[in-house]
Image 1 (cartoon, rainbow, N blue to C red):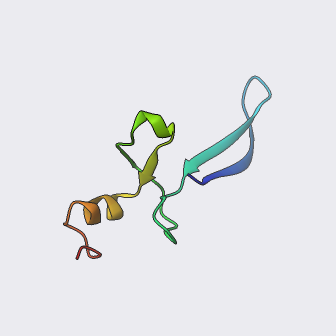
Image 2 (cartoon, rainbow, N blue to C red):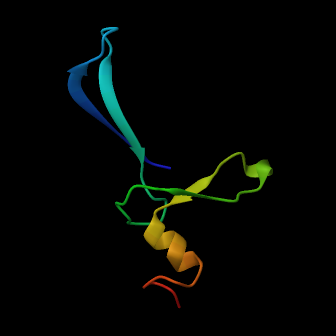
Length: 66
C-alpha cells in the first residue's frame, strides 16, 4: 500500500515538523486516497485498501463494474 508523506514546513510546539500522510488506493493506476480496508486473511499479514470509487466498483455500484 503506497503512502504519500508531505512535509509542510510547519513546526509544532515540541519542535517536530508537521507531516501529512495518506495511503493511496491499491487499485492499479489509481491516484486516489484510500478510505476502505478490505478483508484479508490473517495468514497474509497484509491488508488491501481502496478508495470509495473502487469500493463501489467491488460491490457492483461503480462505473467500472462489469
